[in-house]
Structure formats: structure tokens, C-alpha cells
Image 1: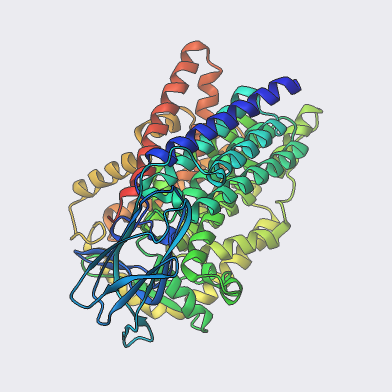
Image 2: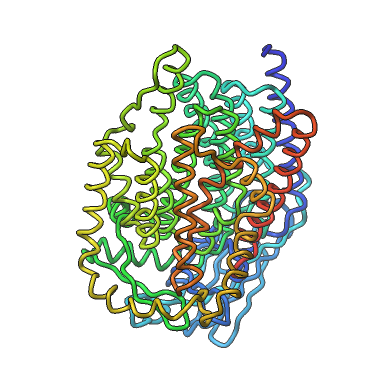
Amino acid sequence: MTSRAALATLAVAVLCAAALAAVVARYSPPPAAEVARGGETAFATGLHRREMVPGRGSQRWTGTRAVFFFRDLPGGPTDVEVRLRGHRTSVLVAIDGVVAGTIDPGRTTLVALLPTAQAGDHAVELRTDGFDAGDGRRLGALVDSVTVRAKPAARPSLRLLALFVVPTALVATAALLAGLPAAAALATALEASLGQALLLWPQGLVHSPYATRLAVLLGAGALGGLLFARWRERRLAGTGPWAFAAFLAAVLVQVVAGTSPLMVVSDEVFHANNLGRVTGGEWFLTSVTQHARPFHFPYGVSFYALLVPWLWAGIDAVALVRGAAAVSGLTASLGLFALLAPTGPARAGLAVILLQLLPGAFDPYSFGNLSNVFGQSMTTLFFCWWAGPGSAERSRAESERGFIPRERKPPGGWPAGAVLLALGCLGHFSSLVVLAVLVAALWVVRGREGPGRLRVVAVACGLGLAALYYARFVPLMVEQLPRLLEGGGQGRGVSRGTLDVLRLQFLGILGQWGLPAVVLAVVGRPRWRASPLDRDLVAYWAAGAVLALPAVFTPVDVRYLYALTVPLAAAGGAALVKLREGGRGGAVAAALLLGAQAAWGLRGLVEAVAHRYR
């Protein structure tokens, strides 16, 4: 690519980012830290953890002092409205250090003007004596909202402009250096900038400190994508551009959307509390299901055990569990790309992109199944280790030279496989069940040749470690085995007939995967005789079919549809490449199916981030 084309691409990306900054600054809603709608974390410090109250939604208490920060506000007369409830002592409200008034018990609202009409940053502080909650917390008041209303900005501030322009320029530059054509690099940069605008639009988050953190996250994603692309390009020529596209897509969904303060996460406090329990030395956890008659089951600890040092370092527990789940999801996506890259970089890249567009692959972030996200990520990485990108590269290279393909030892040897298997089994109980069935299926498809000594050692060590942990819970599990005869059921619902449960499973497939993804999976389904990788993918599907049986005939559902998003994405990527290579009609079909799945996935993403649990 000529330097002129690169400069033109960069210039257009920067101009579009500046235009988006101007639109968001002028037309986005007034900045509002409103607990009922989520997003208050973007503005506030000094709040206790979110509480999900049945029938009343979410609520958050202040401590004795809480501060709400508002950035890059336009000049002119500006109203500040503070709405509180539940306080037992008077709450003093100060704006930029100047006392604006108090909200006494029995009153809920205070409206005041900013003491200065200058443009820039402002802080609203709440101070109160509070009361003892009886659980070690000192509670101040329940926050309904802290809202700032000003005249729309005529233009974005220089800082806000930089927060849009710099990340977009970094993404465009990294995309060009990774080898993407000018048009693709521009589209990638605009995708990141548009995602940034959409995440900062609701409730005026563009005026929160989160706007800076988001810009830094996008810039880091661009640099990380470039490093990943360069690494993959050195391993296998031609994979760099697709590696960058896959990396950025995974960052935008798994990390940026997955950690957005706008998203209300149902069980984030549950996991933060579990992390605290493990940090305090409580290593054998249990939990209950959401059935009408709950099951009491063992809860793995590997997710939390890995985070203990970070908690000791002073990182907030809620932010830590959410961030760790996001990083594990990103890592699993990159592992999937590395696994599929030798079969074609386009297939690998499209598979990872398609994975981000499956609602069932992102919903666990919103539902708060964060340890399950970790367990699924370790399951994916173990499968990638077993199938082995190294073995595929070696076989391909030797076949091209006329040699009989030979299997290369799995990457990292048996210790890597054992660690991934143990982490997955100990991450979440459903991951234990999925991995046990998956390992059996992978073993069977190896046939007479067997899995090889290294894989046998890895499986023995990994499952052995898991068995040592779960052995403590054998009496608990045996006690509940007779309940498997209760029949199929879903969550809090009562037992249902087989046909009703089958209908629910079918609806789950459509809702969690999407009809376009199902069609692509059928077109790109793995062939038994095609390659060792295809046989391993067949084994993955077979494991899912086995796991579907207890979901239909017993109350147990180990979220097998979530587990199957990995072979589904692999099949979808293969289908898109196959259709594209099948002439104009196939290329049109591929574009339509991918576009339809993108619309379905983005709809689910918006629902999860901006609407669920409101």
C-alpha cells in the first residue's frame, strides 16, 4: 500500500471520529448517574456494591461520603439534581467544594446551580453520618440519581475530541500495519469509533471519567491486535490481517462491552463475595440452582484462586471478577483463531468474528455467570491444546513436501493440557461435566491410534486434580442423585413433559445461537474423514448431543448450548469461506447470512448491555 493511501485512510478515520465526538457532545442525553438504569459506576466513587432486590430492581447505598464526577461539561447555567432516599441522617450536598444544601430525612430531592458557569470538570459530593447496617457497613443513603442538565455543547472540548480521535487513529494505523487493505482498515477504525460512541451515548456517559478509560482500552486493543497479528504472521504467512480483525472484534465484545459500567450484571456481587471467601481461606464452596426445588452443588474455585493476588493488590473485587472473565473470554477467542488458522486465515478470522455475534456467547456476562465464562474459556483452550495448531501446521507442511504426516506433540506438552483441564474442571461445576464428556468423546474419535501418551498423562493429571477437589462433595452429590428422576425442567420452572422441554431446547437454540448461525453450521459442518481437526470437532458436537440428553430428561442443564458455541463458530467460519468460494451466488448468500447474524447478535448485545435487569 502506498503511503498516500495510508495517509488518506488515516485522515478519513480521524475526521469521522471527530464528527462522532461532535455529535455525541451535542446530542447525547444529559449526564445522569441513575442507578435504576445502570451506569452510575461510571461517575461515582464511594458507593457500596449493587443490590438486586426482587420486584424492585437494583439499588445502591452510599457510604458516609460519595463523589460523582462530571467531565467536559459545557459552560453556561447548569442545574444539578440529586435524588436520594432511605437516609436516616441529613445528607450534605457540595458542588465543587461549595455547600449547595442538605437533604434531611423525609426529603428526597435537591436542585441547585453549579457555583461556577465555566466549562470543564465538576464534582458533586454527598456527606452524611449514616447508620450502622449491622454487617460491618456504614450506610448513608440510597441513590436514585445525580443528574446535571446544561445547554448542549456547541462543539466538543479538546479532551473529548482527543478521546475519540486518538483511539481511532491508533486502530487505523495498527490495521494498516497489520496488512489490512485501506478500505478494511478504515472500516475497522470506524467500527471501533462507532462502538465507542454507542457505549458513551446512554445517560451521557461521555461526560464521565469512564470516557477516558474506554479510550485507553481501545488504544490498548489496537496495539494488542497489532502484536497478535505480527506474531501470527510470523507463525503462518498471510494470517496477520485476519488475526488483527479477529482480535479487535473479540476486544470490542468480550472486553469493552463485557466490562462496560452501563451493563447491570446480575451476579457480580455473588462472585465478588466468593472471591472474598476464597481469599479468606474458604476453598470448598457450594451454591444452589434456581430450580423450584434448588439443587445444592459444589462450586469450583480456580477462577477465584487465580485472582487472590490481584485482590491483595487492592483492585476492587467486582471490577476484578468482571475484568478477569473478559480477559479469559478474549484469550479463548484468540486460541480458537490459532487452532483454525492453519486451515485458512479467513476461516479462522470469520469463526472468531461469528463467535462474538452469538448472543449465547455474551449473555453469561450480563447474567453474571462469570466463573462459567472462565470455565468455558478454559474448555475452549483445552480443546485447542488437544487438537493442536502445531500438529495441523506440521501435517500440512509435510504433506506439501510429500512426507507422511506425523503428529506433533501438543503445544506446551502435557503440563499445559493438564493445567487447562484442571482449571476448567475447577472453574465451574458445569464445565466439569462438559469437559468430562468432551474428553471421552475426543478419546473415542482417536480410535485405534489412541490419544497419545502426552494426552493421556495430561488427562490423568488434570482430571485427577479435579477429582481430589470434588471428592469432598461426594456425599452431597450422591444425596441428590435420586432427584434426576424428577424429569426435565428449566430454571425456576416446575418439571415439564418431554415434548415441552424439547420445544424449550429448540427455542434456546434459536435464541442463543440465531437461525443464520444454525444454517451456517449445517453448511460448514465438519467431515469425519476430512482431517484430524474435523474429527475432533465432530467429537465436540457429539459431546454436546450427549449433554443434551440430561437437559431433556432430567432437571440438570449444564449449559451445553453455551459450550457448543465453539464448534458452532468453527463450522460457521468454514461455511462462510465455502460459500464465498462458490461463485457470485454463494458470496451473496454468505454476505446475507453474516449480515443477518450480525443484526441478531448486535440486537442481543444491546439488550444485554443497555436494557436487561432495568
